Image (cartoon, rainbow, N blue to C red; front, side, top):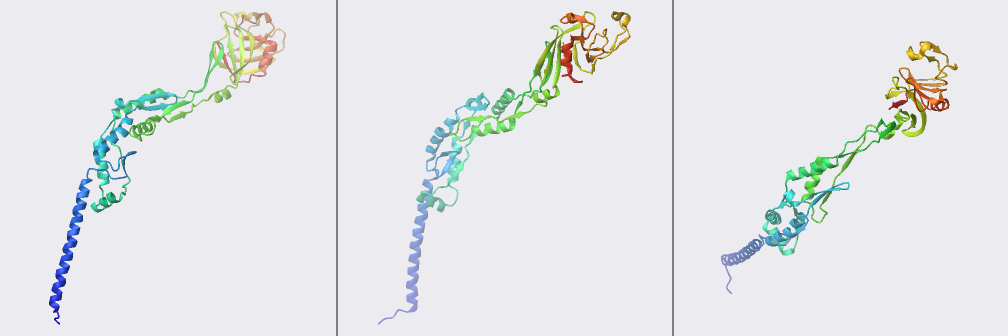
Length: 359
């Protein structure tokens, strides 16, 4: 029986180990070569799960991806963008916006995104169908000048200043301009919304609604009505005095006004004082004759002011008269004459400080 020496055993084992190692290396090199070849063959392919905006181009060749983006991304972007403010629409065409998309850059970025990581990871994803789940932002260019021009157009057309409620006398009538709420547009906010919409999800409507902010006037109609709870309006041409309460017409009365040379003064005044059965301080005027400068007691038969007095300005006021036939004419010496029963009704409703408009 022949026995192998230890040296011969070791020599045989070394040759076996080398052979196994060489075979393993060959397999590894072959696998590496296969991976390299596989990876190289997919260098122009977009990895699964990669999107450009909302358009899925995963698994497509670069050429096919470019065609899909032109059809699904750029074509819808050519539709006009409409800015809506209330009932008014402001369109912005792709031509006006100078809208254009760099499809080549988008596909290049999508391919690069899908090739991130090691060759082993890429090969594994390719062989197993695993996805990257990455989104590339669309590379879309537009004119900033066109956007600013559109925003300015909307701001000018839509914005309006608030109007304060206002009271004035027109043709013997109290005219009230009602308060109006203003509208304001935030240009920066609208510009951002337009910019985003120009390159946004192409499945969404191509429109932007303007956020209108309401601005309140400093003086509302309700505030004006409280301020002018009672108003008198004198129409000298029509010989009428009209009582308004909270800016609404209540009652109109016939009057007489000043004669030529002693006209009842026009303008805006207030009721300065009130009196029941007032004394008459006769003016030192030629028309007063022998009574000039005297004082006629209240209630006296020769007191023309009669039972009530509403003082307006510089000796001019509203008062009753016993000369009923003078009503509807220019007969007084500047005052506003009324029938006694009418002035008594009016007197009870008009406090001191009441505005009176005389036209």
